[in-house]
Image (spheres, rainbow, N blue to C red):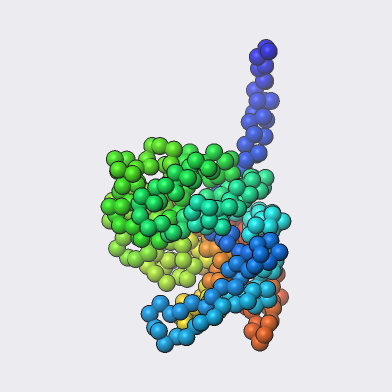
Length: 362
């Protein structure tokens, strides 16, 4: 077959079309939203999962008697009620609706809560990647602390690399996957050095399991942890401003400077509010009222002012902690009235608010 040489203008058009197959120009790929695929219902999964969340005991005060759980359906373990009802995270029609919501909000990257090989969440990940790709949405991993050692985590990272690293919907940074490591303090510096330093005995650097690793900054004096452990950056996750040092927005400028000094990435995380008293009735002190979007605006703008590499949003659908931007509806059941997004507010209020704030981030 003879070689075909395209005119420069036509070649430019072909290249543009090729890019648009994988990226949607209306989405911001520097904005990442934390997403939970752990929900189930009887129609798709044989029973309720997570909607029937248990009431949790106090972390230290044994006088709180919180035995019991929620039945699901209309009475769920959350202070808000989803517009889509008690959906299954395995329902492809739900996944598509969620992708459409991300498009509406302008969010380019979904940070997928991942609980290890063959977990409930892992079994649906390929489906999420396939559907996300058709919408131009990218997926990155939010790796939960299910592992107990560096050795165990290494096998999990190898599995991720083998099964998913070639998928076109996977979010890449510097041509490598991008992993948020929740509760990264669970392993000590020496354990992380085994994995994240080039000379470490379990090192993933410069091989197929390498990635951009983002640890969780929690307490005040953690600069040495991130400097010596081998992480590529840090994020703050928590939506309750002031809950810990890292999630206190007035500290973000300082954290940004620490990141710059150590050539690390910084990802401050904004949330629309926080309310988890259905599953933690003893935790009212960490409630953050939404105030018709003002809380979200203040936290998101504080993130923008820190001039970060990325901004995280906590969360798309962590209903138990009331941090979701997914549409919610007014509802009352068994004497309980769920919270909503404000008088006369659209269920899509926080998706549209996110779109406005992302435009400011641009």
